[in-house]
Image 1 (cartoon, rainbow, N blue to C red):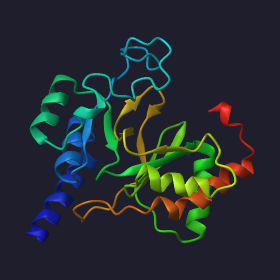
Image 2: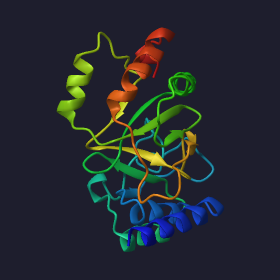
Image 3: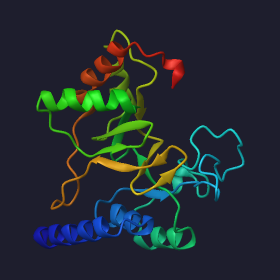
Image 4: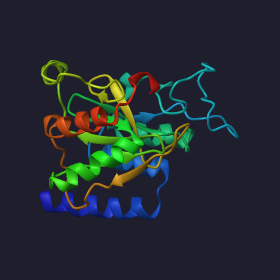
Length: 221
């Protein structure tokens, strides 16, 4: 049964790579990897920076839950197909936390430097997402108490380092958002039932150090 599931995942991943449509991607994440997803708000036509939600000053245009809300995120293939049949261009949002992946994100320039530093240490990474503005590392699920203990041990945690845990979300490829297209900076390796994910502790020191060395002002992000 395990071999059959792995073959099915490889087939779905190859098909997704050839045809990166949002509905196909959403169905793949939900059915093959059991990642709970839901459609994002999306952007209005001819205005990529203007969110379809009622807020004219939306901080994350297109890339947040609107209708349905975050709690509706599901792995049910029929529900996912129905959502994206109605809104085929909607961004694909992953509801983080619980049994689903969590994430850590930082501004794009520092994200590139952090990737180089992690590679230099030969650190094994999971999938990494990128937009023109930010780089997002997917990590194994963590709890808020565990995250709190990790951050408490740090002398300083820059505000531009964002943690996406229980009750959070991130946009997945091939979403189009107000921040630009979402792509894989490091794509998941095909051939397994779900992508491997590192623990957040394994990445935290390098990410915090990268941001601290740049002297970023957290209010800028």
